[in-house]
Image (cartoon, rainbow, N blue to C red; front, side, top):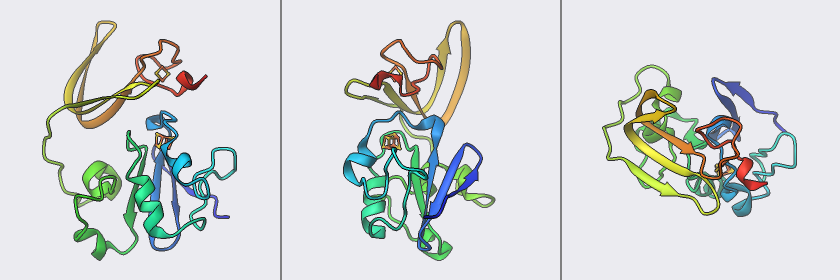
Length: 164
Ligand code: SF4
Ligand code: FES
């Protein structure tokens, strides 16, 4: 099984057709990926992503479900990335342009959306100011998960501890 390669902030995995990026600090362990496709995303296995466990279509569908965009993907054929549709929500062209390298399109400013995860954090997406313990931080076209259980070791952000 391919071990995956590191990139800034996470690891990436490929099956030759697409590459899936996983950003550890954005993962709130919402479990969507492994409830949907344990053949590919299995946290009890090392490496935890097996890109040969399912078809490309099923992997894309599952990555698009990740609520925090800890998981994103792109085609390995750059020509195909140019014509990707917005319905493929976690394609990195729309979500994480820093992964695209030079020439990436700037994401247009979007309204702020707030999603409350069941028994989990608040996921806030867009451009806004985050004020915490007197510190102010500008979040620009990004997505963060704010702890709601009070037990995170990385306050104010969720680190997945709520599952325990
Ligand atoms: S946040 Fe995304 S990557 Fe992390 S467990 Fe949930 S669906 Fe999987
Ligand atoms: S809500 Fe995830 S650690 Fe608190």
